[in-house]
Length: 159
Image 1: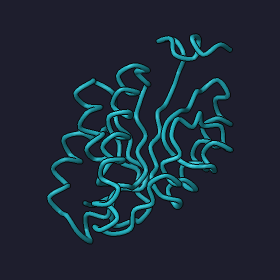
Image 2: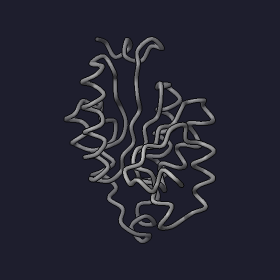
Image 3: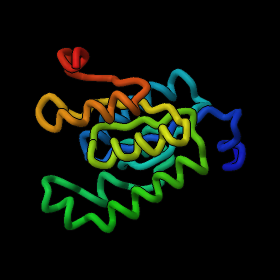
Image 4: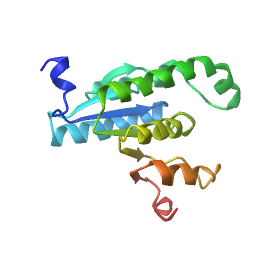
């Protein structure tokens, strides 16, 4: 199938964004499961090697390129993150996937969810940000932008 055919409105596609190695692993399993059920599904986006191996068209290796643990690393990588964020928004606007699938990585992904909502693209959040541990103000952003939240810890469903 040609690249042009993949990006027509009749082709089903999902854009994924996972920014950490653990998210890359979880998203890879999800992509594998989805593609097993629908081999014609096209998955593209930002992630890591595991997602690419599962069938993702890897646009940016975010898991390897910007490893962020803590505020100091976030500040140090800010220019790169800003550029990658702009690229992600451009990708959403140009490819118009059926949905955006976000995996953890809340600092980046919650902002991207807001942009997807502006574009009318549904947002699926797989492995929700741990709002119960910190940043409870993010609940409002999640409620306003996320179409479907898939949680892994049972008590998170109540939040």
